[in-house]
Amino acid sequence: MQERDNFYLTKEGLEQVKKEYEELKKLRDSKFKDDVPNPFESEDLNPDYTAFQEDVTLIESRLAELEMILHHASLIKPRKNSGDKIVDLGTRIDLTVNGTRAEYAIVGTLEADPVAGKISNESPVGRALIGKKEGDEVIIDSPKKTTYKIKKIHYS
Image: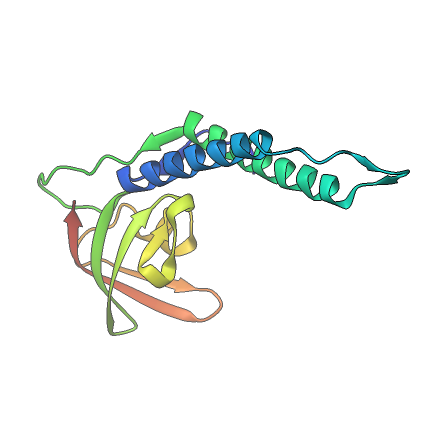
């Protein structure tokens, strides 16, 4: 994972990252509480020790990623209903996609899940929708032409 300025997360997304971090710390600690395999079995490297080392390396790597995310996390604060509604991080949008109804939430890249209706603010669609108003139409031409028409914007 690359060093970044910010990781935009919803309150729920931040809680999930914190939960995963705490669970991994417990898992790492439990690995060292158990009997750590001996590095050598006779003159050969012990395969149990090799597997133990690989597990610990993976856990430590993920913990480092999560620490960086937590250190650079920016909580998405929903906008207040005021005047013109525009699409921004944390908004939910009712729209049509080539005439078919859909609902999307604009989230940070870590929480993006298009199947669940969560699109990243950094995706081509997310970038194109941000700053638009109800009634606006956005056309994305990659690889095929798709038309997004914003029907309603919701602030959570």
